[in-house]
Length: 256
Image 1 (cartoon, one colour):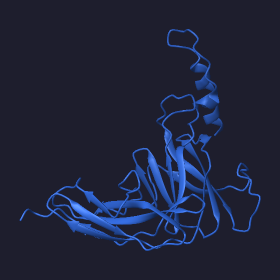
Image 2: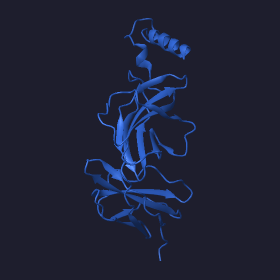
Image 3: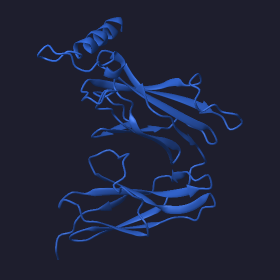
Image 4: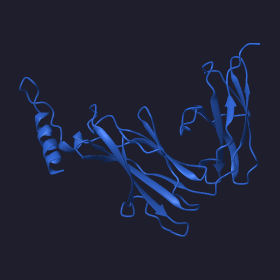
């Protein structure tokens, strides 16, 4: 760690001089650190918390960054009876997970520069808060992300999903049980091939409204497995994913 800090100090001094020997703008060593992970969100999904964030690709000065080796996730748990929670205090955070980008665990999936992690070690009524920092191959920590928090509730029941295979598309139908916990916003649809693991990232970018969806972006001869989660707006205003539905099979049919 000492050698890494010395390297950053030297690098900061070198960057004040251009190739022709003229002095450039001063870059302080802490600006060479990785920027904070962005777009951090925490949302309840079934009985787990789905944590999503973007891997930083720039340093704090805005220059390209290519040596991020992993990320550290710290978590704070506040129980249902704890009052006067200090949201800016860091003393109660504990290291929850260390992720190495070249060897991610099964509960974490990468989609380009996005990581999606499922935290299944949660209990209803507790408030869970997360902060994330990246680190370089030299072990130097970057800037900390903003805090993402979610209060976990009892899981909501799964919707029912049906799939109808057609020659050029698969038609999907959703139905949900009424719930007293909030109002239905729409659905998240998940799709995978038969050989792939269940995806943490929904196929849709925005909640699917209504009770039907047609999927036409398919390859012939491939069997697809679909599942869905209802999106419920709670009285607190938070949006919660229900438990996952059954998996429905869809495949493009040959013309008859």
